[in-house]
Image (cartoon, rainbow, N blue to C red):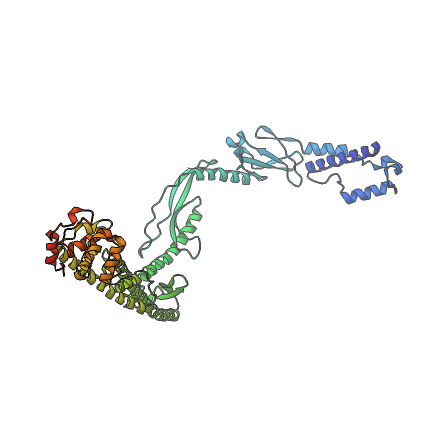
Length: 527
């Protein structure tokens, strides 16, 4: 770009900046400041149709005229850079659209020099009023106050520092009396000094009073003790507390009266809904509410309309009757279920009894069915199942008693040979061993082949004794070679025997012996 044209642009820009600064200092538009539209009009009139720098015939016509230096000097004299106040020079800040300002901070604030400011204020030589700004604190939470009126400024700063005294004062706790009683009242406002005024030094007095605190209109009233800097504010809140006390005492009486209303318990058959009660200008009544998850609930409510209260009570009466029937049904069902669970547990004990193998198969099947069946959900079916299960359990108990009686009698009359209780015989099960002894005693001796019984192998002995007894489960799981000695002892005890049990203590040799005599006494000897 052409250097001459650049010089024109730089000259005009600096001239406009200087004009703007002088106008700001003067506080008015002394020199014109052109906007974009004005610049366009001004240049169009001087370019004479030139569309490029090369076509400009006279570059001098594009220069703005110089500012009037006499006017500038006058403005600078009337609006100096500094002003004298409180025996010091303060830098004057000039801002567009604002009055000139000086700042008091540091020692001026800490030593309360701002108090010495003249009430008439500070003016510039030209007569303009200067705004005083007092910085009361610095940092991220700094604060300051500014005003052209010195009395107003002093009041702002004084309130600020007195408020700091207030904030640093540890407010003493006060005892709040019991205001629920009808004879109670709001105590008088109390006063206490909390510091000295930073300007006058006179005592600063705090006023304390009980207030009615209610964050929301629907919330109950709570009582607090508050301190105030202004007595007027304390008196306003004290009067509000007196008015609130009347409502509070009425609410307390209503609360006590409603608490005395008996809420019906649907689980009790004699439960009733009480009549509506006249309470504090309204009516207390029991209301029924049905909820999806929690069912029907009954609660005490209060309303000013008597007809509304009666209608709600009538609905509660009908609902209570309905709920009582259901509650009684549920209670009976639960009782029946508890009883059925107990019977089912009893049946389980009986099914897994150590003597269950000696029960009749039909009775065992019934116990099994009770133990592994699901309980019905209907009351009648549950009661029927319980009664049937009780009868079956009683049969099983009686059967076990009879088994035990027979066992005790058998233990007195018969001694079971140890060979029948061995691992390959009946493995310590004396009941099965005794049953085997009964089967052996019932065998007809005249059909038994002594050669097979005493001398043949397992398969021949097994087939022979099953054929003679007609019982396919004659050995009941025992090894024929191990228990056949007993058949020989019973039916062939007069003959010399080998030790069929592989235990000489379990056989006799040529005579009936002690075991044979015991069998004869028990009535299970030879036939």
